[in-house]
Amino acid sequence: MATKKTAAAKMAVKRVGKPIRQRKAKADGSIGTLQKTIEKNYGLPTGSIKIVYPSGRKARIDADVGALRTHWETRG
Image: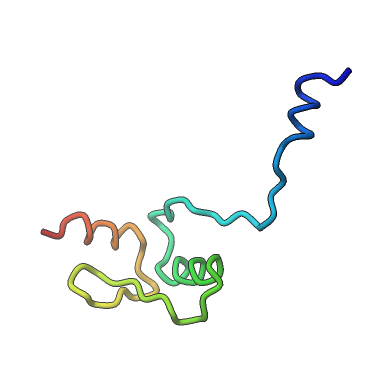
């Protein structure tokens, strides 16, 4: 007779696709890395992501994610 753990493992659904990381970006990460990660995870062409400040100005790729968050939190 099978144990509960074995029976549950047999009934578990297996993943079909590769899992995609969907967590907050680290504050010390760069905007360029964030853009590349989003493009890669969602299968988008290079250059299709544009991260902007609240004013609409494009964020530099060497800026920090923490600085971008600060701009968006202090808008108003």
